[in-house]
Length: 94
Image (tube, one colour):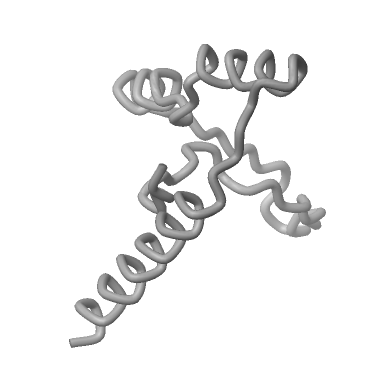
C-alpha cells in the first residue's frame, strides 16, 4: 500500500473564536456567511479514502490470529513512498 499525500480534508481546522468588541459609533453589526449550493454539495460528497470492508476483514484476521505481517513488503513500500516524496519535492524546487 502506497502512502498517498494528496488527500486534503474538506473541513477547516478548528480555531478559537476571537471576541469582537463592537465599535461605539456603528451600533450593532451582523455578519452572515453562506455557501453556494455547489460548495455545499462538494463538501458533503467528499469522504476520506477509507475501505471499511477491508478494515473489518483485517480486524477479524487480527482477532483470530490469522493476520500475517510481511516486514519486507512494508519496508519496500515505505522506501518507495519516501522516494516519491523526495522526487516530487525536488521537482517543485526546480
